[in-house]
Length: 244
Figure (cartoon, rainbow, N blue to C red):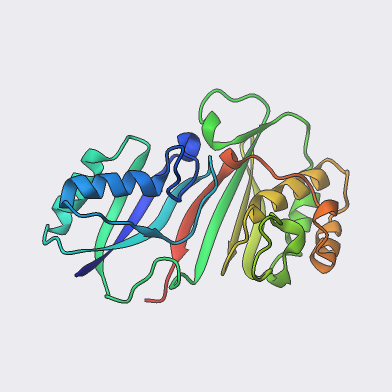
């Protein structure tokens, strides 16, 4: 059996998420279908983690095992030829037999894009937001995130996560033309964590909350006191890091 590691890019606009489901298109489901056609095996690829419905990826990682002896180049061309236009395999490589895309992941980085005002291009990849936002207090709010914290205030509570602690290595806002861009890197992420952080910092950018609210929410774990969950369409998984 060969263990193969995939680097995947996808536009999540028309998917109900990564994980295969009975109803709706999923990235995992499309990969299963393509692999069945190409290598004539029933294969379930395992991703580094689930992404929500509507969330995109530039660097999702997955692995699968196969008996097929097809060369890497033929697998890459074959999969990209079968997969729909909104999924692209950027790279395939041989991996150690015990490699696991989810359990071996050490860090992930996400990006969230907010476009200030109306936009015609790239609409499925940004949250189009009309109220004026002040960037400096949002930048200050993000400085409270690095470190290990309890993110109970910033995650979906149904179902309740097994553990709430995450180690954040970096978190920052920047302005790129008419877009406010948030990037965050951590060892793990809870469901809807980035989107709730963004929704809360948008309230800070509107002067509805002070920047220190982030620190207080990390201490309290009170989801009801945090902001709304930002739309999925502005969120992209940038990359997943592993030990060499």
